[in-house]
Amino acid sequence: MQNIITIIKERHSARMPFDPEHPISKQDMQQILEAGRWAPTAHNMRTFEIIVVDDNKILEVIGNINSPISEIFI
Image (cartoon, rainbow, N blue to C red; front, top):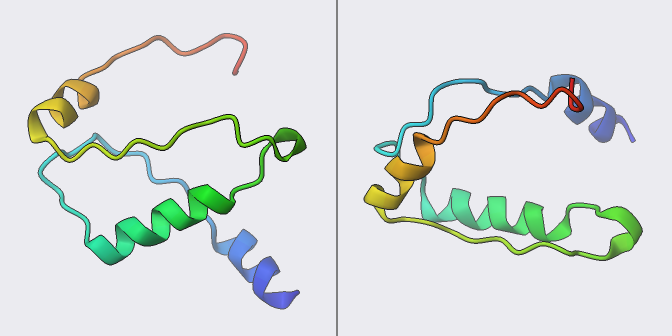
């Protein structure tokens, strides 16, 4: 139980500009995908798909998406 408390306390969100030139290792990618696969969902329905994009041109387009902040979210 203490490990869970430590993980929760040390969790943080990184807020920085998207950098399509910053590669991640295959091992890190596998861990990210595994975490997403096991992440909890409402009623354990898993109604999402995970798509890995490794094309720099597409990543740049995605990184340049600018949308307004949702009033509902705030």
